[in-house]
Length: 134
Image 1 (tube, rainbow, N blue to C red):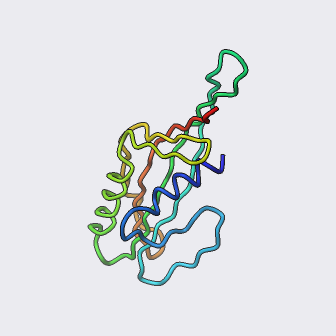
Image 2: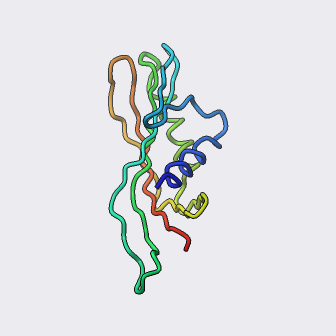
Image 3: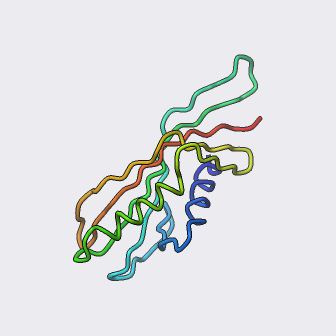
């Protein structure tokens, strides 16, 4: 469902002073020593909610935002940015995109993924459920 991805990415982009963002399957070249983030939609199962044949469905998944901060600056900047994203996608946030309503199902979580090459990686996992509006 492209509306789910588009809705989640659009909501992320409304965060003030948002970092440059690497979107899934879109060409992106990071700048040296400049923090950025990447985001992915990790889809889970789809549930049929109908008794009849009205096509009402619930789409479940995780919107993963990975912060990529240059090493040597400590973890404070990445963790502060993660907390801003967590607040922006707090539990019960509702995002409407065309015929889809997306709800943040529970409070997002932050995980320090360690260092990869020259970047400290901190992931924010946002569990969502989305419903098609029929």
